Image (cartoon, rainbow, N blue to C red; front, side, top):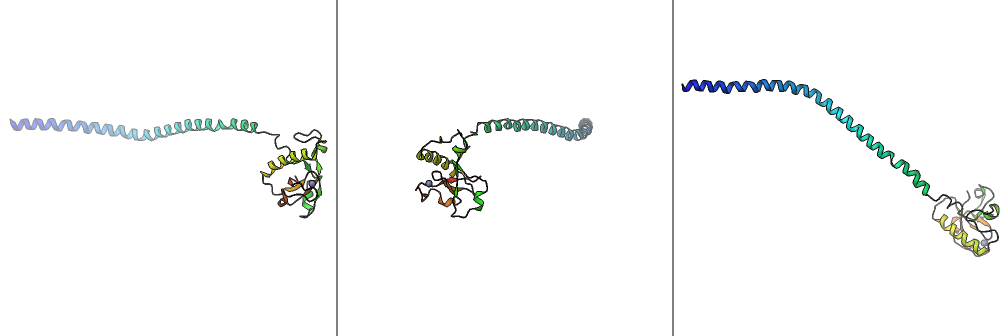
Length: 181
Ligand SMILES: [Zn+2]
């Protein structure tokens, strides 16, 4: 009987082993169908994620755009309207000048009456010079290749920037930075 029970127990053991095989087969089939759907789902999920991400990034990218005009609006616009008090009569005057040539300049406050930041026409030479020196300091902080020098009291200009802050022989005042544009 011990053998028989062994047989039964063997059968019992062997039978359930068939169930997992069947289950395994069905789960394999399910897994196979899952294998087909999973990449699709992953792709769909990826596209959804990308869509959401691009939406957020798009929103983030959009946000600084309205800010930039605001920052440019806060920039002082009229501050550098004049960086010198004299001008030459023509734009290309300096192109024909030799290093030692001096060209007559015209005071801006005479050609632009009541011009912003310009000293009054009847201002003293010292007053005008002080105003021009401040403007020259501003201009000296910007490197402009074509800039020259001028004496705003004698109303003459020269193309050689090397003469900057050296005294003009006629009046002894330091030459200031001059733009030809
Ligand atoms: Zn001078």
